[in-house]
Length: 160
Image (tube, rainbow, N blue to C red):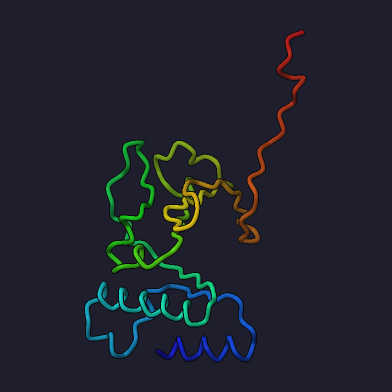
């Protein structure tokens, strides 16, 4: 409730156009402290959804996955929507779910040698397509950007 009150004040006083909540699991209210973590997180998730509707603002919520799933058949350990289910009803409440991964941080990933590659998996999108988006990650400035594929020299491939 404190978060909703503060968000209403900020939206009214400062014309806020976007709300970002870093680490949903840390948003447990005093009344929710006596409940188990998945139930508390589920209730907070629902309240955030209500707040977004009340304020007519997009809300981005960052969460840490409890990523203890088995590796996929392609020998990588990619996050999936199933990893969210331990956090209550987050996947059900969300309109869009983006799962970020960096193959260089996943042992056994076939693309682990590409230190720039970051992949955003659009795992859920109520009003649009799903799939993967490949990006470049610049660690020096902590920025994601369009994927830059090295130019191919068209002459090098020609047989003379």
